[in-house]
Length: 178
Image (cartoon, rainbow, N blue to C red; front, side, top):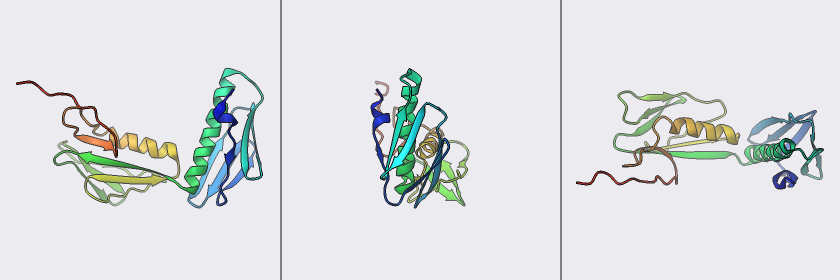
């Protein structure tokens, strides 16, 4: 039994859901997202501002997709109503970020600055030279952009220099003994 898939999703007042065949369109004050349900054995319906997912089969794959599609639509509802945001920090001497037009210019110890191009539906905000904020409505896209920026210079375990998420704990190693 899928515990996640069986949970009903309450639809906030500002959010509007349109079902078109196997597509679920979620529209809210921050934007619009579409999820396409590819599994034919998973059904969904809206009644009294509650979206409910059901499945017709108890096969293992159908059970796992039941929970997956419910989670994707729930994330879309939160995204169009509240939005998602990530914050990255740069740590280290000479590590800084600036906003050049819509792109990010990251100096992180290389011989050249790294230019990170603007991603559609993501806006970059640089409050100071060591912090990057980027809000968006798609949870997966915000997380992927955070991973892509972080992969430019991941934090190293000896001094912790690099790009990390705000609040992330870096496990430090002990250096050489004299």
